Length: 297
Ligand SMILES: [Zn+2]
Image 1 (cartoon, rainbow, N blue to C red):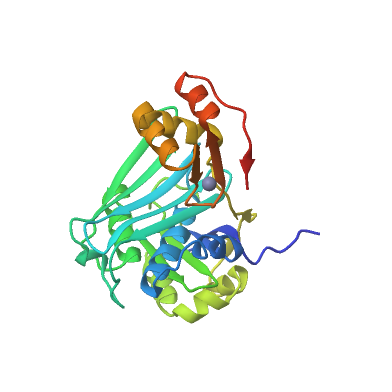
Image 2: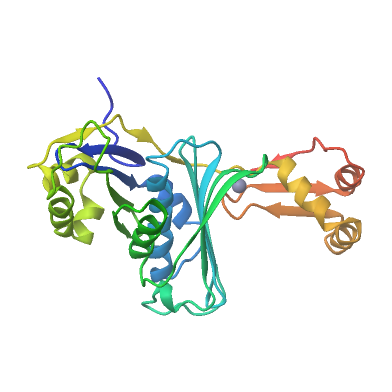
């Protein structure tokens, strides 16, 4: 018997007759881990959850190694928003803001905002990066524009989040010719779009993925693939923290040691893991070695 995963799961599916492929992601514990890391104002929590769900959705139909990240920077109250999903389905994310976030805000209103989708392995320099046009007020619309521009095929996104769940649905029209499933169902895409438009935010947030797909597309031929588990996970490590410290330089490190009673404590903002360094560790890492000191959870 296979366990039915209702949360922290990614399902790929095919609406065969309509010529549409889709991905649905439902996050529970993994999202709450991210959401609970800071006192996020409600509209920012919503956007962070939507972006985390989207970064998982975007991994659904591609083969890649490393991580897929969505990063948003602006000069407004929201400074930075970052979410990531690795090839192993490990998710993390955070946002930083420096002023009051309005109750409703549109992506298109963020001053000097840039959103980038990056796929690949940073360490090996094998990366693909695309910029998302932010002229649309919400993330779903911005991603639809991105797909229309980059793949020349229509896509539809429905995203929602609250304090408990972050959920996303992505649909892509399959190319008309060449595919063996293409039955030239001209009405396929508009029909699926129409069915999807009936989906409300509350329904998206409350219903388990398989039930949701049944409710929406029970008149279609739905092929559901084996679900992929997702989980919260952070890629931070002592080695990475050492590299970061080394990049600060001796002067900065010595000044920090001086002001903090001979200790440097670095806390990962994604997972709250703490890395500690004393004078011996600092000397060791500055001289090029890696220290094997204690890591305190
Ligand atoms: Zn971490």
